[in-house]
Image (tube, rainbow, N blue to C red; front, side, top):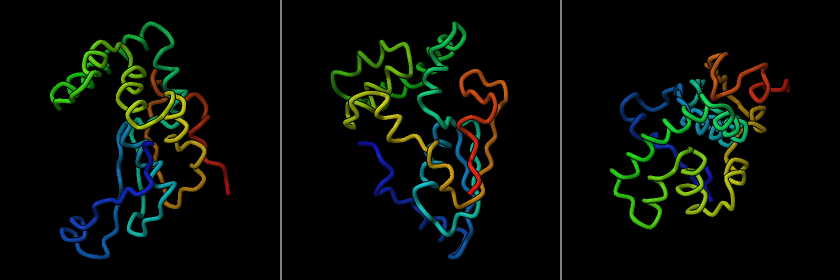
Length: 168
């Protein structure tokens, strides 16, 4: 299963370049921002003093739904598959999935083929539940700046919803 358990950031080069005892500011964009947030809710790194995410999904299921609702969202979803397909081909990924990945029309399909099946998630929903940090936002121990467009048609930000961090 995909999990951040056992993931160790490569801080040695940062310590060498910036000096031992350096304080880190982490920045993640899109899925990288979601991964950063999940990581920071499950791990304590004293060197990290703050973080920011830009256009990062929080509720994967809700984001997946937004990507499939409406003509514009479906077109945008299809267009997002193009770089994923190109990356898959140029990385020389072997196996039976190459044709299926290339023929996919949604990010949901590519996630099922490239992430869910190989990593042992029965469904996309299982994958989303295992890697979605929404319910763990209250565990953040560092300030997190979330930069999000209010009118983003893929990442719904209406109200605060899944982005709100409860007091506590």
